[in-house]
Length: 233
Image 1 (tube, one colour):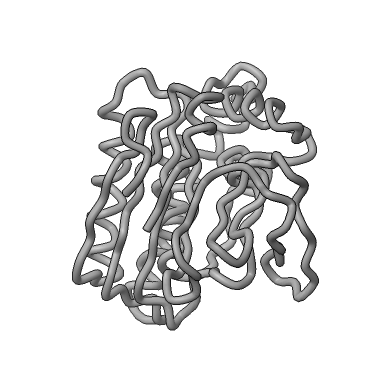
Image 2 (tube, helix red, strand yellow):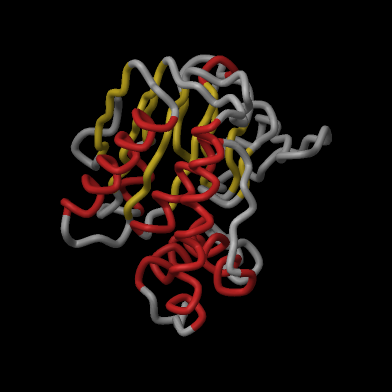
């Protein structure tokens, strides 16, 4: 279902990726969706003052991604990792725009635990998903767009066998596999480049699972943590 190219681990030996497969999820607009929105709003308000005083140039969960982006040729000040994008939105606006229940849930976990995250609707995936280096031959259609481009060879991407799912590692997700109200079968990713304590990633996984069970009513949730010694789930 999911693989990390060993070359990614060669370049980033401390990387760990938690992969969470949730089935039977409800992403409909209902009372639990409203509850997710309200929890996200409360969380962002509680974090705003802290994040306004944060030096992103010295904050390890951000600096590690800036360094990783530089390794494959991205410009960190232009292309923010997903976590820095969330943090700056909270610091500047005091809020994160609600998308839908499942997206709001994983944004809560990302903000609270300090890890980059993403997700794909598995009903829209062709074959196996790989976190690896772009071939230059697979198209990418960004969220909200119908126009495709071809990420350059060597860029770190998530891709299935037909298309790129996320560009510049965790910078921008694609239109095709986005989570919508009809989504029931989801693969979530939690990426750890910085935590010296392995339990921190495990706590984030546990929190995500608890929210998915409580608010999205998922009927089956399994997970694995991939490392340099175990790169396939």
